[in-house]
Structures are given as C-alpha cells and as structure tokens.
Image 1: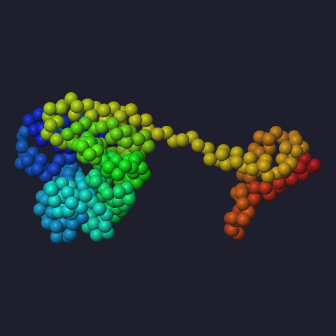
Image 2: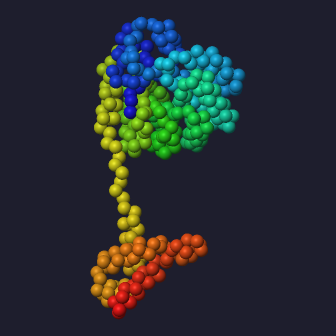
Image 3: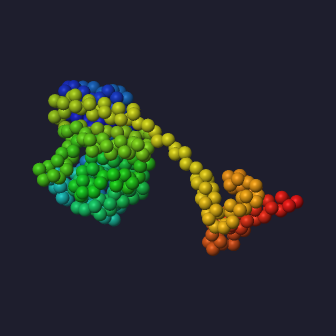
Length: 366
C-alpha cells in the first residue's frame, strides 16, 4: 500500500509541505500546466513521485463529438509525458446538467446511453494517451437508496466493459449513503475490489439542514477512518493500492500540523494492519461429526451394536470412515436425489454403515 495526495496550491513556495512518504500526487489541468508543463521552479517534488491527472468535469457520459473534442484538445497533449502514469475521471453526468450547470461535477444517474458513452470515452482516452484510466464514484446527492444501488451496479458494469480501474472515494460513499439514511457498510459488498487502484479519504462537512457535503479543507473524520479500518480488516485491498488523503484546499497552509497528523495516522493504521489469517476450519471433521449424529439417531440398536462388537463409539466410527476411504465410494445422505451416474459411485449412509457392521460380524464369526 502506498500513500498519495492531492495537489495543493500551498505546495508552491513551500507554504505547505508535502508529506515525505507520498508516492503519487493527483493534480488537475491548471496545476499540471502551471507547474509541470511551464516548468515552474516554485515547487520541488521528489523525483520518484508519480503523477495522476485528475479530472472532475469531463464529457465521460456525453455524445461522441464532445468526447472527441475533449480527448484531442485536453488529453492527447499529455501523451508523451512519462511522469503522468494515469488519468482519473469522476463518473459524472452531462456537464450542463443539474449541479454541473454551476461548475460542479454533475450527478451521475444510470442510463444505458450514459454507460455506453462512458465505456467508449474510457477506451478512446486510453487509446489516444496510452495512460491507465481510472474512474471515481462522485455522487453525493442521490435521491434514494435504490438509486445508489442502481448507480453502483452501473459503475461496476462500466469497469468490467472498459477495463478501467476504480478510485473509491470513501467520503463520497459515506456522504451519499448517510444523506439517504442507509449504512455505508452495506456498499462494501457492492464494490469490485480487485479493480480498485486507489482510495480517497477527505473531510466531511455537515450543512445547516444536516445534509453531508464534501470537505477538502477539514481533517479526515472518524467515520471515514472507521470504514477504512473495516475494509483493511477484511483484507479486500490489492497490495499495490494507493490511499490518497485529499487535502487540496489552500487553507491547509495554515494547518500543517493537522495535515501531517492525518498522513501519520494513515501510516499508523497501515503499519498496525494484521493480515487476516486463513481460518482453520475443518469441513471434513464437521461432516464426519454430523454423520455420527444421524447414524446414532437412525439406527435404533446402535449402542447395542457397539457393545456386541467390543468397540467404543469413537473406534467404531473411525473404522467405518477408514472402510469408506478404502472402498473408494462417496456417501449419500438421500437416495432420492441421486441420478444413475452418481448412484454408481455412491452408497446410502445407512446401507454403508450396515454393510460395514455385517462385514465385521462375519470376520468375527470366522
């Protein structure tokens, strides 16, 4: 697991210092143009720092002509820049719809047309730039739990059909769920974790009416840390994943201590992670114990048989299981469910046990 950060304008002139162990930095078009393309000397970064261009507002779900213009004008020029390892896009709606009209990342609402357009855009962007394409869940204000479910199913289909990788923004996920009064933990099972390349963590702002909003100027709250810990405890993440603390507002230049504290806390959580050990379950043991139970229940004179054969119960069952293994057939718990093929390889458990007892009795008589 590697640390990532979002570009902060306060990095210029060292008004805010980037955390020393960050491996990847996300940045938008303006920062890329100003600092890297124009080769500004005001920001000094580690030479080993990878860059990911991050685009909140794109024509990812819009018509072909909009997509092609954006790709040619905005993405093709970065094709030869080897510092850019990936391009991340919010999965958003039309830039002229809903809050997109006011300049924000517009709400994504699933439709077959939007899915088709998104898949096409991702493939064309990858084809024209040679960069990895990552897409991020970006909704905050879904209208219902059903819409959240529908949009996540759509997100997964787009991932599968485009071969993009996923950025899972935990703060976005929490905000969207809590604004609809459902538990964010429910969505852990919706996510295609093998596709996830990056997690985003950020602050959360509570409005006057109780609605939650994204908050890139505040510390990562407990609710975000808690769901991150759950995901880590479940051992769901790829080993090469980036975990990004998105402290991108300029006001962080006055809060270096809090900025560093969040990164240190993230490092501590990762360091203290105990990889889930494989559970030492014994299905064969449990199956044998159940067979013992039903044999004792279904054979009325079971304990009389045990006494007559001069076995104790454990010895008798162990001998029977050894007999089954030696004969090489499977045990059936129901005669009615067997077809002719499986029946030729099986023996009903009562018949098997009875035949075994008769064999022992015959040997004893001999």
